[in-house]
Length: 197
Image (cartoon, rainbow, N blue to C red):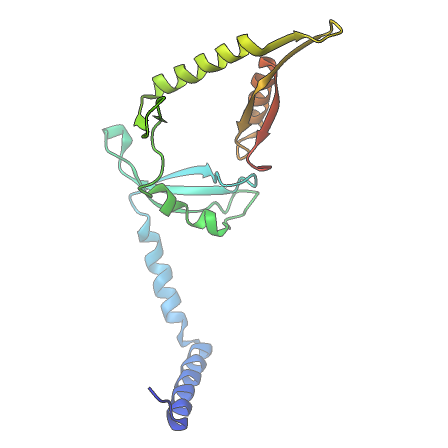
């Protein structure tokens, strides 16, 4: 399509007239209409406060879900937004945090423990009991095999150097303190979180 000078000037004039009308106050009708509808969007939902899990900033989020767990109904998250009362982010979210709802509903999201057995080319679903028992057993066997109680000088060191621990950085101070105590009491020296990875 070829744009003539006359059509360009007519289009630009119409755009200028529209923005002028909006600047004179006629655009506030749409804003008032949207503000009147917004509260109805979340009627009948349950509000749950949480922390965004993406990075070590630990922004506060509010998740809204429909469905009553007390009645045995499935609760589906329908909206996620920043928590305006949270001291870290004051209601703002980065692009990844703003897309949390898409990640919650993603079909590729891991929802249960999976294991790939030796020689297999696919992952199989397992129960949480199996997964936690297997992790505990492998950690115990490795610690028994590689634990160093004393160094070459005979000084007690209680070290477990063959295993490390990767913790979540978006946790509370209390959880981080308890995690550090458990990891260090087991003798692990390698300890980090995803904020540094």
